[in-house]
Length: 115
Image (cartoon, rainbow, N blue to C red; front, top):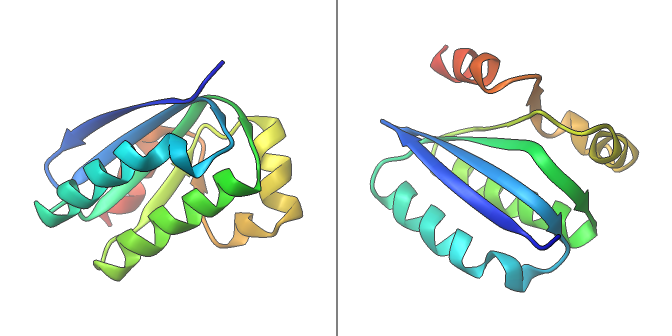
């Protein structure tokens, strides 16, 4: 399966749902253009929903870090939700589980970001 994404916007909160295999930067060119536009229009926080992610490599992790940096530089935060076990193991091994705010659902992430 290739990579795809879907964006849902709710006021200053954006839910980014990722699907498939994220293994190359070229897969995310359009995604970053959209994220930059949304941030310029006032989006402060992003929830990254991984419920339909199958595979993620080090390039995929660097893309997550790029999203996190972009959002935090604009005063917002990122919450990662619905992390599959395989990807969670990768986050633990790389210690990125301590960098990212991880929740079990979009609803819990929304509550976290409303605080």
